[in-house]
Image 1 (cartoon, rainbow, N blue to C red):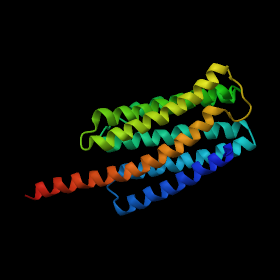
Image 2 (cartoon, rainbow, N blue to C red):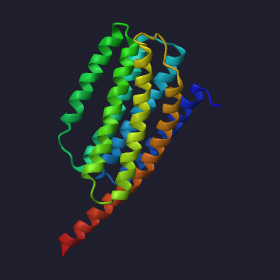
Image 3 (tube, rainbow, N blue to C red):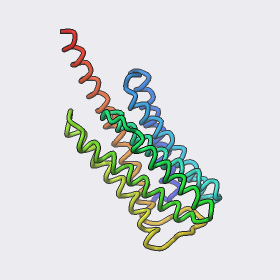
Image 4 (cartoon, helix red, strand yellow):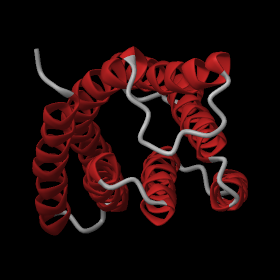
Length: 223
């Protein structure tokens, strides 16, 4: 059975490969800005995994704050990429609440309540993933099959993060001093790697779908 460090390493390697793939796609099609945002978001999540891995070995308040901030920022970027793809322009609806939650998290973590910081961050990530799922469920209209799968994967990933926060909440672990390590964390590592890999593949499909729609629109305009 893989230990927690091996799961984190697998997540970092998977995320790095996926991010590089997204950057290459964007270089070949610069108009697909949502692909660039996805690549940046995944790269931030890779940074989170590396910092979190370091935190598991050397638990310091600064590393804890950095890991939690990177986790929220990474999924905020993925949420913004979904908004870009679907044409939702009011980015402040996602950015402002997320930044507020990150500020509160940094504050309580600085005061020593790192467990509360983890709970707040997991809640923020769960809400961001749920918003991605809802947006694709409601606003998607070009290919319902792909969009519904994206929605489902976002929901599953969000539930795994929600479980991590719920375990800490139920146990009343307001102060940890070390990285949380329980069945929910291990489950989340596996689910996150699987979902991010699948979402990366679906991003390619959405990119090709968008390109086909734009090409069709240009053809009709030329006529």
